[in-house]
Structures are given as C-alpha cells and as structure tokens.
Image 1 (cartoon, one colour):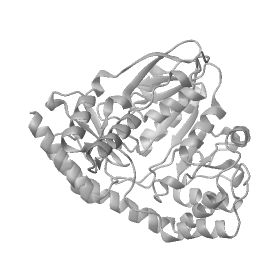
Image 2 (cartoon, rainbow, N blue to C red; image 1 turned 30 degrees about the horizontal axis):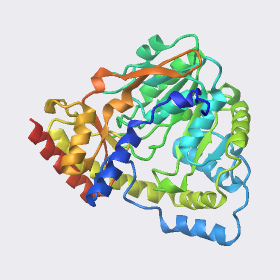
Image 3 (cartoon, rainbow, N blue to C red; image 1 turned 180 degrees about the horizontal axis):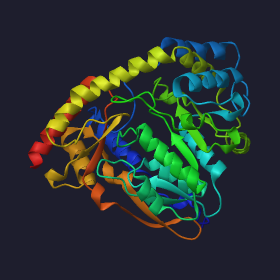
Length: 410
C-alpha cells in the first residue's frame, strides 16, 4: 500500500470552476453538441498579429534558451514604463519579476510573504484560486463579510483581523463580483493595512476593464513614499488586456527591494525562468498596449451593455458590473440552489455557468494548515457567475436560454 498524502495540498478540494468545466466537456462528448460556455473567462478576441509574429521570430532566431529569473531586461523596462505611464506606479526593473502568468506570480508572492501561522484577509466572496493559493503557501485565511453591494468595509476588515494577520489581498476590478473600488475606498484599505503593519497584495488582472470609472492602482498611492516604507505588491497579467491566455505571461511589481530579493529565491526554486519566446511576445504587446487594451475593453463593455441588460430587467442582476469580465446573478426565485440550477441549465439548455457558492467556501483548518471540513456561506446558495467576455452571439444565446430556463422554473 502506498503512503497516504497528508500535505495541506491533499486536503484542498478542486474549485467549482473545474467541476463545471468537466461537466460541460462531458456533455459535449455525450451529445455531440456544443455547449454555450458562459463559465470560462476566455475572451473571444485574439492577440494582435504583432504578438504572434514576435513569438515566432524569437523562436526562429533561436532565442529559446534559459532566461534569467527576473525576466528579459527589455520586457521589464517596458513594464516599468507602462506602470509609470498607465498605473502611476513608481518602480524599477530590479523590483519587477516576469512570471508565467499572474496566477504563478501570485503564488510565488504569497510564498514570499508567508510566515508560520500567518493569516491573510480575503473577502467571503472570492476567486477560489486566491483561497487555494493562500492555503498552499501556508497562510491561514480569514474571510471577512462584504456589504450588500459586495463592497469591502474597512471597519469590518479591521474587526476580522487578529495579531497574526500579515496580508490584505485587494482585487479591483473584482472576480467574481465586478466591483471596482474608488480612490476613497482604496485609500481607506491602504491606510488600515499601513496602520496595522500588513503587506498588501493588489491583484489587478482586470485593470483595463473598468466601465463606469477609471482604474486606480493601489501602489500609485505610495509613489511619494521612500521605497523601504512601501507595502503594496502589485500583480498583473497579459491574459486579459491582450487575450494572451495561453501564452501564460504576467508580472509582479514588488513594493521594495527586500521583497524582490526574496521572491527571486522563490522563483529560482520554482520555475527557473519564464518562457523566452513568450517574453518577446509580451514586449510586442506592450508596444501597442493602448490601442489593443482600449479596443478590447470596448468589446467587452458592448457585451455587458447589450446582453446583460436583459438579466437586469429580469431582476436576476442588481446592476451591471462596473468592471471585469463576470456578473453574479441571483436565481433564488427559481427555488433552486446554485449547483442544482447550474446542472439543470447545462442538461436542459446546454448552457454552462458556475455555481456561486463555490466562490464562498469557508474552510476549517487543523494545526498543520490542512482543511478538516468546509462549508459555504449560506447567502451564496442562489448565486451563479457568468462570463461576458465571450463571443457576443454566444453570450446573447446563452442569456436567452438562461432566461427561458428561469421562466420554466417559476
């Protein structure tokens, strides 16, 4: 008999995202019919031609060897320029690390900041990968309640914190809620973290997808502080703004030199380096970033305005999401819980959505940081998430079929 796996990783369940992904694939195999996929954040637009051309050209030039842990210097310098001009963040190439996707960058950053017994503050309604990564890195997650409009309240967060709290994670625009924080809210959260001596992780994957107000990078509020006093570590990706999901390219802008030095060690032991040809594709993407990002934002906003308005009129959506790629619908009037709704919608209409309760998992840990049990916040039992970054025709079809299904249930 092989030995049991007793690691923290062995106690973490797969996320709701993968469950519905597998169910949708199984239905396509069984029926031979395509599923309307509103469960995956995969954009219908594609990278610009110069991105692919730069990747291929790098391969043909033979630039396929190991790259340094930090990333290609030309890419990091281009990122520094982008962060300064677009985000108002003051940094240097020495504090920027290129990563194979922002997910890997987030995990390495969490490993960089983790301490034995340390806690990280996450919202009760969260991206499941944030929770998984925190657990894998060795953090004990503390989940704080959000307001009725899914917005964080600094007083509530302060009350949830303990002397063991070390990190506050901010995600604006937010996955899955689409909430975009304003300057006052970000300033209050940063002030709380600074006053308590916490690190801040700012996940800005959807930075270019703000529809009702401008995006504000948390680290921009620290640009006038000495580097050694900064606490905000910012994580970005090429996947959303430039549709480079499969390229796997992201970057982390560390708050200070000490954090950058520690994360370099984590990366050395973790990935060696990011794909060299992909980094050349990233350089090309940044050269045309303004036009590409603006066009892609307009495409997704058009989807939001056209297709999601019907969901708002039907009372399933309180308001159109202010940012990001996702909307949280409340299907309580059908009398079905989120998981039952998602499975029956897939079976009867061929539309895949994600049960919202999976974004509100509440784990109980043992002393070693393993999950011994978990449940879900009861208020999330009727929520589902849909992605509106998909092909417009698919989105409109999916919304129509979803509304038909709701009408059949009530």
